[in-house]
Length: 626
Image (cartoon, rainbow, N blue to C red; front, side, top):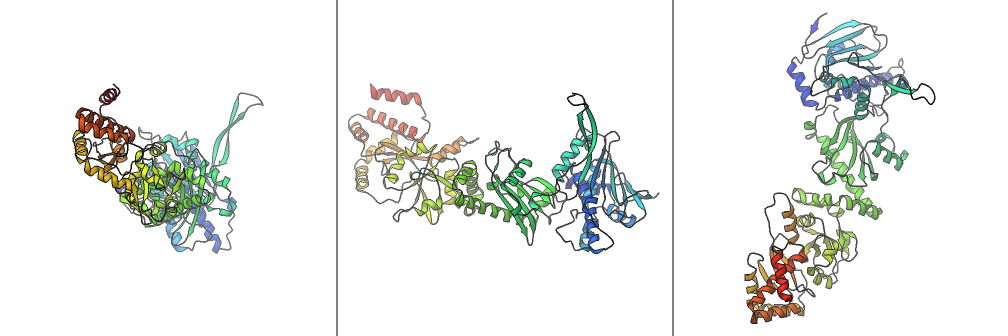
């Protein structure tokens, strides 16, 4: 018996393919099952053009036969088989695919397709086996052949006995190591787990004898174990069924069977595309936020299948970060089964699929917003922060995509509203979309800075998420209406008589404000008369791009650089406190300094900012009370 060398020749090439293409050893079984499925498909296609052949699907199956004692695993199929020449061509040449050749020579119909097109999947067997033996009898042949190899050194082929048409692949498992328990690949539970994970939707039954037990007698606590053949895979993927045949319950069951979450899906999205690229997708908007969603441990991505066979559990390239909450799967006949994570990143077809499904996700979210407002609000409360991060990320590259999905609490409506709804209610004289930022809706409603805008009857959007103001600064405007903070110096509101009087007051008492600024040197950049305060005596505003809320967010981050807003202390000239300030400025400079520090600390507390010296602050209060 002559030993032959692989035409691809070297041990290094075989090791390179195994190590670079497959990151997990368990995929060897996926590859062998896919090859077996292809072999059965080939008989089906032959039967379409050969009247002497009939194809009864019930006669075709794949069988998994583990032997834990001998440490072997056998994968058997009732497919088309191989003759000696086909063994030479398909198994003797690394990276040559018999399935691809068959596909190129035959016009495939009736929704069937050949899975294995890349030609290296069979060699994944050497990741778990020292010796691989293939026994095969081709359709129409009287002779069977045995192919045997111990790795890249070469292989042998010799005639052998085999009664039925089909192929058996027999693996002699490697010895266990510290890194891998190879014995597990001959254990029922592990094999069932791998089959369900990768090959659950192979269209032919995958059978295996499994151990079962029953009481020896009725009511007995002693059990008898026995073996019984069981079909492991479910065969028919939900995504290949007609949408009209499926109910909401079917989708919910699928969501839970696939362990996409412990909740129920809020909405499902079922996509079938048959064009320049073919794919099916079922995606879900979850009901609840996963416990680890806003942590570094959360891993986004959809399951990626090639013709019903799992390629990747979490294909991150299919979803942008702002839609990372979406769960589900994509199945395409146009993707290679053996494609690696690195190759996926550059795959043009995958990028087209990603673009299309992200468009679908947005359309379905907008539909939910229009047709089931309560459900959309609940969705937004769970995942809205991620959409806002999406607006802010990548220098605002996705703001046009996401702006219509955003919602914020409205001072007028007392509920979440969209930007479109806000703009549609704006009066003609209103120039800006007004917002106020704070820790909660209740605290924002009490902010002194909101008084002027609220007094004009204008709606204010409340920003309570740390990302809100950053996202809006990236968005800049919506439908040609700029966003403007209620703390902004220019609110676009025409000057009132009170404002004119305030300006006059500021001019007449500029020395007073200059001395207050001097007292608060290093704490504020300016002290001035306020044009926005009505009933409150004092407030803080900020000059420049960093607002007071942004200062709090940035300084709460790890490794913060103590970024500070340029704070401005604003005094209400119509308040009694201002009269006390003027009197002390003229008659008692110590009291004037006391009042200045008290007003500054009061403004800090209103903003939720920390008072630098609480003891000094309480002592100042005591001095006023004494």
